[in-house]
Length: 332
Image (cartoon, rainbow, N blue to C red; front, top):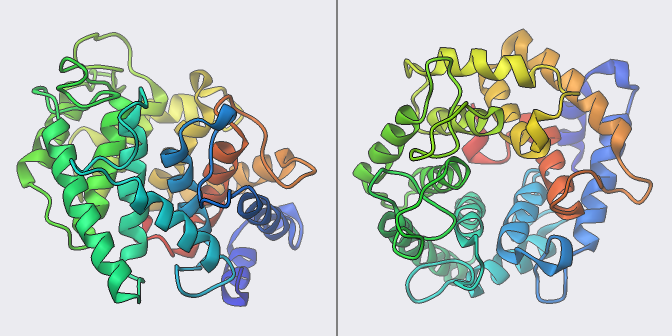
């Protein structure tokens, strides 16, 4: 962490934690995460699963510190991670493996991560490779969209047109990151996705798991949906106020379970609260930072959650570094 980033973090994150507890936790987490990278450049979840998704999230966490593929303490790790993701790009545009039963997660996170590093990439050859990979990735996502406007764990064709909220959010955020980075994204793809989110929103503001299954809204998916609407520039979307109210019931208490999806929920809810800004954000980050600092493992990682230490640690590091503003997609 550079001195400027450190000064900003210490100044703005709650003083009630102590002078440098947050800085120490972030530094330890970043060191642990960097050390988990394999020689091939990848990170994985439990049992070696989800290498594309875990590598993308780890790259995001390290990039949030301020390093790029060319500069900074974690430049070598980011560069190897980016090269791994680029190597996962298939001829049809999918970033990942078609044998992965939930490959849209990895594909969406990879688009998000690669779009974040594109703007800072100084190597002409790698920049051209990034652009080519993302152009084809966007095309794959557009073709994988279901008739209802969402996405499932796999493409609409492979998954018999099944859709669900969490993978839809991952695709939308990845696509918006690509558009922000100058990659062409079909407007109707985004429009259909936003209409899908609206259609899945109940009267109480909760967003359902799927357009076909109905049922009560889920706090984690609702928080993610708000983050995506914000990414799309829809700050005044008429659905947002009641979605925010729904989330507040379950997520303002950061010690709640979020129906078993705490880290996924707060990965997105933190983005929402940061965009909200003001006292709401300051109260939220004070509370969640205190919780996260208290939960870090002696080894430097966060071991909570069922996906694995890499997933949890990367998520928490992104949350704690949001206000540094190094990731374009999360900037106010």
